[in-house]
Amino acid sequence: MACTEQISLGRRQLLAGGAASLALWGFVPKGMAAGTRDPRLLTIILRGGLDGLSMIAPVGDPDYERIRQKLALTREGAAAGLPLDSFFVLNPSMPFLHALYQKREALAVHAVSTPYRGRSHFDAQDVLESGLPGVTRADDGWLNRALAGLSIAGRADPKGLAMGAVVPLVMRGAAPVMSWIPKAYGIQLRDSTVARLMDLYSQTDPKLARAFAEGLDIDKVATAQAAAAPAAAPAVQPGQPPTPRPFRDFVDTAETAAKFLSAADGPRVGALSYNGWDTHANEGVVQGQLANRLSGLDAAIRAFAEGMGPAWKDTVVVIATEFGRTAYTNGTDGTDHGTATAALVLGGAVKGGRVIAKWPGLADRNLYEGRDLAPTLDLRAVVKGVLRDHLGIPAGALGTKVFPESRGVEPMDGLVA
Image (cartoon, helix red, strand yellow):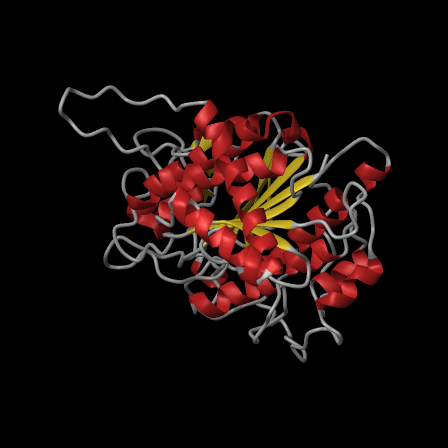
């Protein structure tokens, strides 16, 4: 039976005193305290609303093929997915994720959502990243608030990592954050310009000079390994331009995040995002735009996992999106803004090899508002489970400080090995 219970949003207020007060409840992750683990956490946000029914397909649901039509995956044939269990298959564009699943280093959570029930990308992303129970103006995000209470490797003020042209809301807040802009954004400075800026800042603003120097150090870390390990280039005929690297915007960011998070003295908590999941027309589940995006995500997961090296065993990656897509396809072989979707939790520290779902069913009577996969699990419960069991954040702090006004959402058990 579908879950149609309305969620009360409450007063939608930030904690008095703001995130700065989190420093008063510092803690050390359990694994660190015991000397057994140096945990890393990466959050990846897929912007645009991922079609969870096309990434993790419920082929065991008797209404699935009827409702998905051309977008349906199957157990066999040209549209066959990669088997996960007797009910779900994985999109065939994600073979590396499937290999992690088989090694029990990846799991999926289905029919999951944030508390948001509207269909606006902007509002949905704000709720996803702020960690607040409803739409409101927020200046900080749940990942930064979690970071603000951590004491990592003896550092009372560990830094977070933000990848992208701007720091995403999920990582904004009182805790210090180092940021890196992928070269795909085309922002580069000549050495002579860097030298002049450094000289200018040293004479006029010492604080800015230190920040600029720190930024240069960050860029050196990001580029050093790439120079030392040249990527294999595809063969090209003389006089022909080189073939672009597949999924460069996905893979480069993931590779660089791994360099930072795997470094002995680097950050331990990071965030990045990938755009392009708004598939209103010609979705292309096996061949086409969604299949290509999922291939890019799979390549990014592989690049990050391999880049982490030995640190992978202490790593958890949470992959989430702001909302799902409609269960029914539209007239242009696409899907519109929906509600519930699928999230991924993967890493060497994950107790994987399973799909977690309280399946609502795809019969018309079970759809949310007659059109969407109904939400039966709260994404905050998933994240809370990771933060509690991987980083050691107490459940009480999760329900009041990291995710305000969410005491009734219990952390999900058993996600971390």
